[in-house]
Image (cartoon, rainbow, N blue to C red; front, side, top):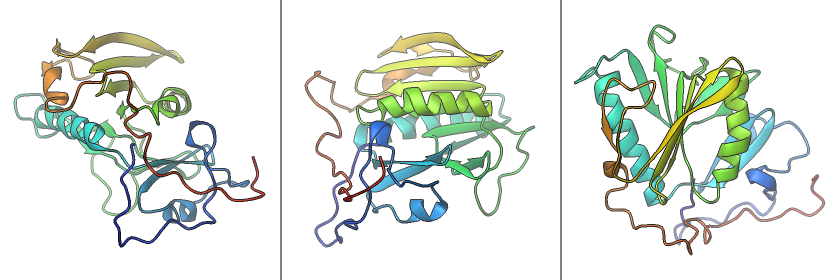
Length: 235
């Protein structure tokens, strides 16, 4: 979820916008609502988890590239049924609401069609995804690995993948009997078959093709804008 710089003619973020704390949590001092998501600056992306608002700058090229490639590789065989079994809905950044109006948006997610026969015409999806893929960046890594991993276990997501474009690494876990069970880790040029999409082989090299290698001295969103602080806010 790395940041995009505002255009020169774009208005500056509202100076009353609260500062973010640990893992991007916005310090509102009250339960977050959909109105808080709507109030975020245009360059930010937000989610509501357990009543708290989390906000991050929007993603940059490596994150966007990986998301497009991941969705493309899985959509063909598993959503459209081309060269694979079909039977899934595969969506990028879907809006999902479960557990008392929680609102979150995985980078890529999938639903088995027997659980979600049709996509809603209006509003968010209210069925828990069967599979979620989160794309990690330095700014969002802790949030994805701690806050969202716990949340996904709580709501019953069956499969969770993590993809790190700069490190060229992929890991996957399956939720079994109340615990995440690691399925493995893969990298760079591996050709893989990973649950729940093991029916088709995926070439990981295509997910970071054209993206500069991580040299360990750069934060892909270190220079992205942060929301301004608000005096007297609740910690």
